[in-house]
Length: 117
Length: 116
Image 1 (cartoon, rainbow over the protein chains, first blue to last red):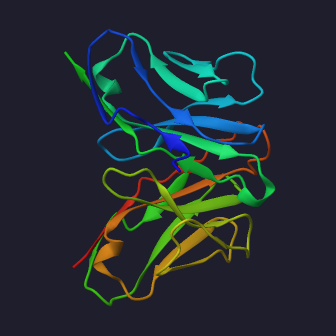
Image 2 (image 1 turned 135 degrees about the horizontal axis):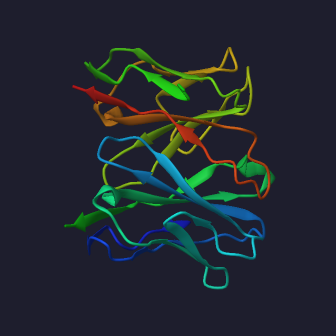
Image 3 (image 1 turned 120 degrees about the vertical axis):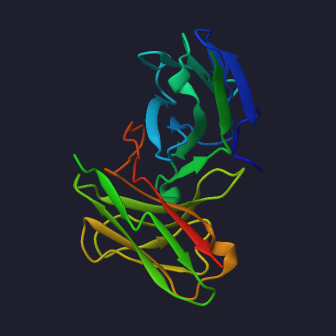
């Protein structure tokens, strides 16, 4: 079974609009972490934001925020006031807390976001 | 401001040839990882290391070997390249992740490898 599901293979959004990228996860662990990374067309992987399972507040980093709904096992990335430079692939990843996992990251397949001028 | 450096950036091999990809990090990270990225899929972990002199298998280790003789370097080897190994390879590193840790993995720029 997929542990990280990103249901939107691609999205088109008008510049300056807010955009929500979906991520659902599957784990039986109580302790885990969720990460979002951005991959522009140049190829590098850029860390954006982190949410821990015990964090009571939704994480925010500048224009990025994470809509964390623990009961639904979703961790959606929200980008406010989108810019042309936000066009990229976006990956959701999970780190489980099991000792035998060695804290590896499990990755979703990604969402390709294109911002239209 | 180097971070994680991968060499080479591009390489074309013939089936059966061998090569080594080098990853170097200057952040004193304990953990290092090798991933492959294929179209339409997320990153898949090949091998990883939790410290100097240690390595472990990830999700897709077959056909690859690794070594971590120095803390700052993590080498990925292909002994006999196959077309199925055509991919983009990423190296990453992090501090000890731990429980509830916000330590992200820091990535190199990737190596685009084609096997003919």
